[in-house]
Amino acid sequence: MDTLRRSYAAVPTGEPVRLAKRTSNLFRPRSAPRTPGLDVSGLGRVLSVDPTARTADVQGMCTYEDLVDATLPHGLMPLVVPQLRTITLGGAVTGLGIESTSFRNGLPHESVRELDILTGSGEIITARPEGEHADLFTAFPNSLGSLGYATRLRIELQPVGRYVASRNIRFTRLEALTDAIAEITATRSWAGEPVDAMDGVMFSPGEAYLVLATFTDQAGPPSDYTGQSIYYRSLRQRTRDVLTAYDYLWRWDTDWFWCSAAFGAQHPVVRRLWPARFRRSDVYHRLVRLEHRHQVAARIDRLRGQPARERVVQDVEIPLERTADFLRWFAGAVGMNPVWLCPLRLREPAGPGSARAWPLYPLRPGQDYVNIGFWGSVPIAPGAADGDVNRTIERRVSELGGHKSLYSDAYYDRDAFDRLYGGETWRAVKDRYDPDHRLTGLYEKAVARA
Image 1 (cartoon, helix red, strand yellow):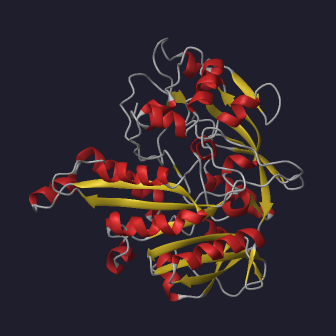
Image 2 (cartoon, rainbow, N blue to C red):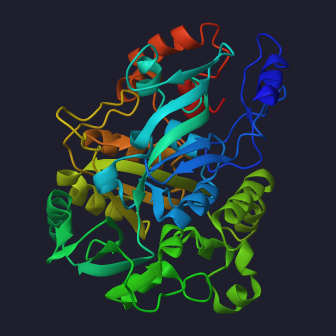
């Protein structure tokens, strides 16, 4: 912590304060820093795991990979484990995260009991749901570091079995799929069997799958998708499957969902030659950053006479009752496939009362949503401009009462952004905890790419 304080003090007055990080899961380009960033090299540890209280104290830069390694020996896991290994706990709370337990556990920040935050004024304060700093606690999720950086978090844990048994249920009608999501969310079961986790994939409007998972200590021989087999393809090939709990949590990481195909990693020959330890999301992300910097593939496309391409990388939350409409529209208007489906509902309170509202990402308590993730690029049509497809998606999401995560490109004007992402609340909390605005603003980070 002393190193962090010294690095904050070293940032000249008037210069923005930002993190010095070696890795990132963001897809938003950023301007080059003019001054050294905050040294967070000592903030990557799991401090403690309490198996009795089912809690963990974790530093903000700890990756979920390291966190899971610490909790699984106790038969425990975080309530929500985002699907990529190098996502940090602090990043998932300030920038949002989601996974297959979100239909019952909400988002990662909803399992936080308290957290220490380095604010823009250089103070480290402890924020809790109630008390003096409750305003910062509720505004911190989706603030993207514009209100401060988490240095320590205390989170809840849940039991998990040694294995995860799953059923891959195919749907040929999207309305049947959304009806099933509503039933499973309400009953946490399907066809008489319990459901502990749920996500899915749409290959086309006529072919979509829900993966219904149950935590168990009793199961047959587990599958292995870290070698030649590829997980997302198995949904079409198997009706039932078993994975170890560890492999289930990282089932999407080996192939970055299906995006490893862009690097040839799904070709059988390339896959045999590509070392397994390098088939993981952070390696692919570094390759993407290299391409952004050097534009090798883009130059090759131009030499071949191919049109320029627009990057379309988004996760959007759509109300369940409008999900089928959005998926059909997306298939026709954008045409990217597959897409990921992850049902979501804000976490229900343990006792009497309503679910807590989170003003910077204002999902409605009691409303079922589906997170729809799509990651790739599309050709820029003649007469169109880079960004047109993303802007069209943003408009459609807003028309359907949805929200868009801000880890990638965003194009909103400031008025629309403030309306969608709690601008009034953000400004009040910003003025209290970062009165000199040392930290880059939320709009500037998400849209202006500062």
